[in-house]
Structures are given as structure tokens and as C-alpha cells.
Image 1 (cartoon, rainbow, N blue to C red):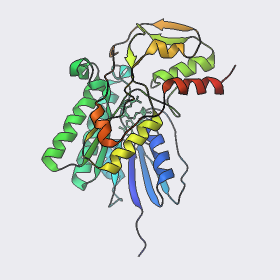
Image 2 (tube, rainbow, N blue to C red; image 1 turned 120 degrees about the vertical axis):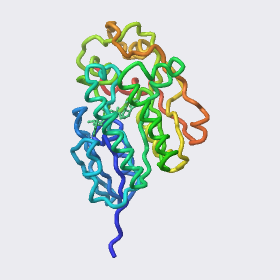
Image 3 (tube, helix red, strand yellow; image 1 turned 30 degrees about the vertical axis):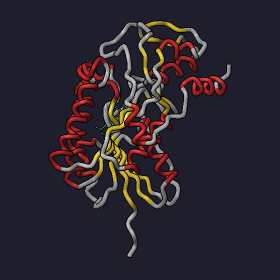
Image 4 (cartoon, rainbow, N blue to C red; image 1 turned 30 degrees about the horizontal axis):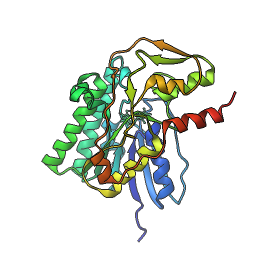
Length: 299
Ligand SMILES: NC(=O)c1ccc[n+]([C@@H]2O[C@H](COP(=O)([O-])OP(=O)(O)OC[C@H]3O[C@@H](n4cnc5c(N)ncnc54)[C@H](O)[C@@H]3O)[C@@H](O)[C@H]2O)c1
């Protein structure tokens, strides 16, 4: 009898972090099937070519329909749930989309994993920790992301859901969004530099963030998957840098723009214990990344 390929599902598989994860799984595992579910909310098409006798299937669909989208898959190893509305500030003007993905869609993903006994790995946001936990109320994004963590843990207590929660801090690297409303800070800085227009820094500029390279994030996610500890892991670099100091590394003119609702003044330092349990050691420094970007894009 022909043996079935193991199946891994990545929601948001065409997005920044999801596509980097598919790339990693595709290059490290053989003879498997990877299914991406993405509704193109972030307007990216980061598709990876299959290798190692793997099959990668890109489904266009909303996570609220996950049951139907995966109806022909009897056995799934793991669902990496990265397909959510992903930006803090933009979640005010797009609150409907944010609730549709992060509330309606995610509830269906959690219920599906619980019913089918599938492990879920959830892409949580460190934005919930700031200001002694009060920052979880700062925006529709932070609130919905934070409630999903409670829901996953409750499903684990109520129905034995097998989970790992991986917290991300400002993630940057290949595939990040540079233009449009879903662009993130380092992508925006790069875009300004490439277009030779001043880099826009949101006031006051002294707000600090833990900038983490996507390769470190993906290594942390894969460690969480392998170790199977049913826990929560904070995948930051443990170093906070102000946004204006990062902008200055581009050695390019800067202008300051007004603060927007949802902005946080500070990021939090990750719980180092959780990193020890995982054996997670972030390797890439933002300063080195920007230096290579400038070397590659010499004027
Ligand atoms: N990038 C960061 O700095 C960061 C920090 C903390 C947490 N996260 C979380 O990590 C995850 C991935 O973030 P990213 O930076 O890759 O964002 P992204 O916007 O690049 O990717 C998200 C992908 O999910 C898709 N998507 C959104 N809603 C969907 C839905 N209902 N059904 C199917 N697909 C849907 C989008 O089209 C997009 O391709 C998100 O859950 C985000 O909240 C990211």
C-alpha cells in the first residue's frame, strides 16, 4: 500500500512569516505535503517552489472555512496558525477585517484542531505584555490576539487541545512588507531608502522595540514544534532599540510623523526561562542586517 505523505498546514502561508516557515519546512523535511490557506488579505504572493519530493498546495480561502477547505485531509500533523490580520495601528480602520480573521477565523481553527486532535502552533503577539499587561486593550489587534491565547489555553483545559504558543516581537527580514497599509517598520524604512525619500519615523522616535530576524523566529517555531512541550515561548532577541536609532543606521534623512492610535512606548523583555526550556538562541543582530542591506543597495 502507498504510504500517505505527512501533512502540515500553514495558515497565512503566503504572508511574510508563513512563507518563510514553508520555505524552512520544505527544505528540511522530505516527502511531505504542505498546505497553505490564505485569503490574500495582506496582498502578498510569497509562493515557495516545492523540493525534496514534497508537495506544496496553495489554497485561497478564509480560515473561517477551514473545515471545508481541509475536508479531504484525514490526518494532519500540525497547523501553524499564522493567518490573521497582522498590524496594530491599521486594526482601527480595519476592525471588521481584524475581527473576522482574528476572532471568527481563529475560533474555527481552534475548534477544528480540537475536534480532529491536531496540534496548533499559534503566532502570538508580544504587544499584550506591555504596561503590566494593560497594552492588550490598546487596539483591536492586541485585544483579539490576546483573547486567542486565553481561548487556546481554555480549549486545552476543557478539551485537551495540544498547542504551542510562540510570541513574536517586531519581525523583519526577507519577504517583509515594504509598501501599502500592511507594511512594517523595517520594510517601510527600506522602501524610503530605496526610493530616496526621507525615512518616516513615528513620534517621539524614542519608543523601543525588540527587532527579531525572521530566520531566528522560524528556528524558534520549529524548536517549539519538535520539543512538543505544550507551552508558551517568547522568541525575542532580548534587546530593545529605539525606532529612531534604527532609522539612523540607514544614514539617510529622517522626518518625524505624528503618533497614531495603538502605538506603544515600549516593548517588553521576553521571559528568558521560556527560551532556555526551548534551547532558543537568537543569532542575528538588526545592526548587521541593515549593514548588509546598505552594502547590497549601494548608491
Ligand atoms: N510580523 C511581526 O512583527 C509579528 C509580530 C507579532 C505577531 N505576529 C503574528 O504573526 C502572524 C504572521 O504575521 P506576518 O507578519 O507574516 O503578517 P502577514 O500579513 O505578512 O501575513 C499574514 C497572512 O495571513 C493571511 N490572512 C489574514 N487573515 C486570514 C484569514 N482569515 N484566512 C486566511 N488567511 C489570512 C494574509 O493574507 C497574509 O498573507 C500574524 O498572526 C501576526 O499577528 C507578527
